[in-house]
Image (cartoon, rainbow over all chains, first blue to last red):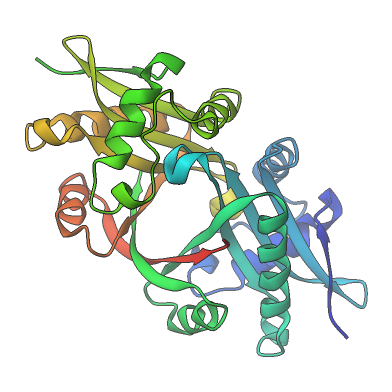
Length: 152
Length: 152
């Protein structure tokens, strides 16, 4: 059965944070304290109140098992075209390899088209080799270098 | 003399579009018709009305000679931290190599810190080798792969 894909609500927040933390890069940077840290709640509200950001979850049998975030960016380049950036893509580690991530990304691509975006873009850590293949299978091209500067 | 760096106004739009077009990748994708295409005006207004997007110009002797766009993205990851994405960085081709791009980026980094961002990120086309060195000199790490999917 395909997952149900929808906008996240505040009740999904603990499941989303667990998925962000359950990852070789994420485990060092997230906080799994209960009750959930106010930083996550505040960030959730900021995303929710921003019409150019959408936090998405995938649900299976009433359980949240996937997440991603879409950012729509108005831009002058390409004759004033909007782009969609996808970030924080995660699938529950016990359910990987079953096509759930693919379903989520196909949904996200349709959403970006519907919003009038000319392109979808993402960066993926150089060590996430499987992720690169996953995105290539969806038609993404590795045309760019992704660079980051820590501001901490 | 260092350039004056400030938010763009609608009057800067023709200069900005010229710089986007004056580029080995941009020349095929921009429209330099006069008067300027309504698509650019509409995109400018969208950026202007979005509190999470800032279109910046650098000015020297009253002439616009550089541009970049900042996008502030609220996010759950890194314990609910905001990131700053920089896109469409251009310096007038007759004035490159004089440190103007560096001034602009240092300004942008301060702006991102001031806005509470944990990191600054960008993608640069794999063919823009000089740009990669430029960003590395500013402290950016080439830690990610940048992937794009055309939705046209």
